[in-house]
Length: 206
Image 1 (cartoon, rainbow, N blue to C red):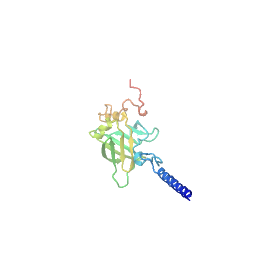
Image 2: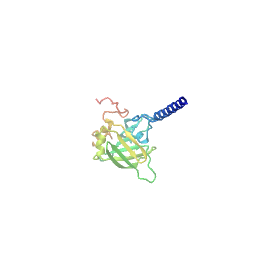
Image 3: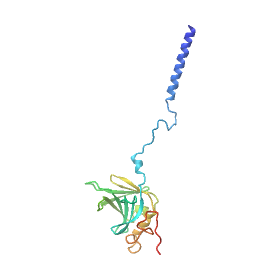
Image 4: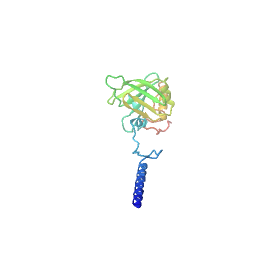
């Protein structure tokens, strides 16, 4: 009888120990960040921080020199055009249509500086919203000199993040020059030919 009782007690203790061991194995180790992780899913906010795909390139708009950004061989996503007067620049967001009945606005951000611009709709087959930056604006100075990306937001259109390129500063410096003194409205942008993408320079003038 004693042997049978002792065997039963040992068996019960063994089963209880196994149960406690299984429960302990189901608890994730502290500090193990990889436990039960399926994978990181990108949020729309993270996607909004991705730079746009494309290149800066010189172009002609209404027989005036402009600086455009977008994939090669396609319509631009964004462009810069010297303002007709005052030495400022027009920021043009191509493909952005205004909401009916609403007064659209454009917010330009470089680093921690933002400026809200009133916009007007451009004329053409592709919708475009256009805002003007004065040469005395802080954003104008950052467009010329900053190496940080340019973030352009127009109402509900997803933000456009443009990579820095020295062509932007070169072009804007030309906007403040009087006509006939190298203003982009009359001549090519710096030493970049109108057909060359960013980074490819034309041969210097003889």
